[in-house]
Length: 426
Image: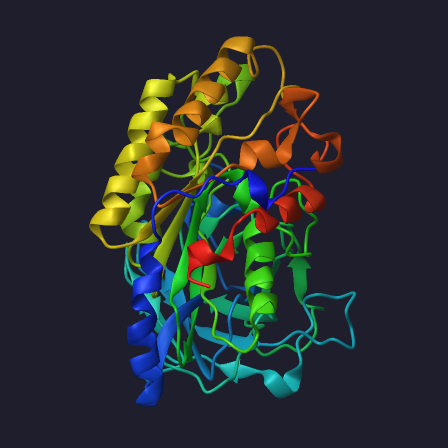
């Protein structure tokens, strides 16, 4: 089994330089906003509910915090919408732990209305974000919260995250204050819609770590409703490592199917058709999904596998995109970490994996482990963590979810464990 010893550490993480600023804030009793949960969004797909939108319907969504604070605020988004969207009513609550089998049930005592400029309803302009008023609801680290939104008129195509790995609940009329889930008749194991982030107010905040990846970080292959994506497990590890110290939030801005150099709707090998929910190319996402995140100080990039299997891209084109991502992150003062590309032999039909494509993967990894890695603040050797030593082009069977490309819960834990916390400022 690979361990954290497989990680290559290059350079000095810039996040350490922020310690004096944080200590000064604590001495003067100041609080600041920090990202606790966030998700990247895309335009709705060309068919189905995400294309037609919601119409006099409510949607209840579960999110899992990474860090806690004394107050919270919620971020809604209409980034990819085709029209202004009316929010009729919005609430947030904790789940009802007395009815754990029905994940739509809320604890009535914890129910709070969200307001926007003091009003309980608001409009999200086309292409815009809507930030709620601060709410005096203490938030704990590593806890579930349920956000319920009512859309009284047709929204049109939604801005959404397609792989939530959590059950979402949709029903007719205003169900924002409903304590049970009786009215929620549509229950897909996917999709956060119009919801993009939750910030918390806290002291001594060391900011946030943004994970910028594809389906491997998005949790494909992990257990639904269990928060076993490796960024979730990294956040839990951070919270456990030094509970007496405020730890950074972990914001998972990954998109299943995302590519460095291609658009979501572009088709791929093996007859893969492409979808809007795979998102724009990674460089195009930076100004929406990374740089504006509340308190971001560290970026972990883990991308490239989809460019290889879908499009047969060269090592040179993948390396060029990774270098550009790194340069833009450092230009904005972020600590920039990068992960090696993990193995996937056995996934898909003819043409999805080939020896030539694996040679491209190995060439990128060789560059990252060598001189190329010197450009980053650290290289996370996820390939060495997940691969089968007897067959390095394949996942270790103990870590394989069954599709030979995505790690299972155990594999996700191994990835989280392989990130040295000192690279994150601890």
